[in-house]
Image (tube, rainbow over all chains, first blue to last red; front, side):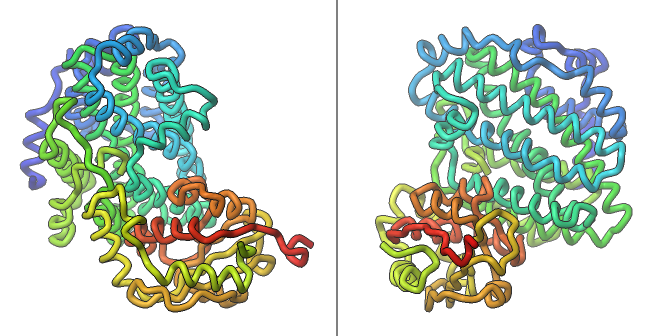
Length: 332
Length: 157
């Protein structure tokens, strides 16, 4: 997709004012009326053109914050144990477990990125850290109360790791080590751009917004797991703020020093190489998806995000994009 | 069973790593994953150093190290080295003795990296991750080397 085609796509996918207000102001009680497709494929892009400042994003955070302990998983428990097939549950767990660990990783690796930010950015990142912690608790509660795992946060993480694909360590291990490097040099703009390319562009902007659609569309169409749908759709709305702020950071960094494009490309080169394989095959069909659908989502989301920061993929990266494994939905 | 980071342990590690990945090691994962790893390993020649220190963030001078010399994915030699030699390696992974005890006791390599029981002290980060699944499976082979982790008195002092 070229830049012009992408802009046309954005225009086509724009929300009406009423649709936008419905998502922007949705509370826990009415979020189940929102279609996840509108959040992921329209709402995120609808706002990007406005380039909200970090302070504006912080204000939105305060209005959109939700209480993870208000979600009721009673029906989810019934659906999991009485209404879903074993094949559905197996596919669902393979995908959701990567998110469980992913949310934990982005929570604990983010504080170091705050150290080198502007004061406005620090303010926003403080809210993002709280968002990610809340998302981690959301998954912890889901695994406890809907699926039936037992123990404290770490116990549940250890148990759900059984379903996480081995390639999870690619982007999320890289993030941990990038955070280590940043801790030594928090103001190093090259390191910050590499970090943001992985965290905000790839993990949140490509992996998360693609994979969210898989389980959420399934839950919506199958009419199961209403607690999961509510909490994870609100999570998707939170991620919209994170992606927008991350792309803003990358855009401003590239404006300040256009040579930093090399850091974006080099990081993407590593990410695409890591994403070209998987240790496990994911059965998407039981939850209503095909492998081609999933791979196409990854590619579309990456091209869109690159266009939004004003970059096109160089030929070698454009070729690597075609090799993204559909099985990356199980964790990277 | 040999003490981790001793001369005997280095010899034991060399014996196991030089055999490469067996069919049993490859079981349970897609062939494409192993093709990726085989390609990644065959293009690496250099030194991966492993280090143990008493406390996370300690200066390297208080630690113990081994160097794993690799040529196009084949382990040539594993030997005990000095901190200065460790600093000269292509990649240096360092953990605390406590972290090594957990890992060598069977804790999986992916979470050992993710939870920072092992950290990349130096080496090009992106190039390390260009071969990350190779390194993860490579480190996992250490689980097959009977090891005990003991902090040497000289180090503990």
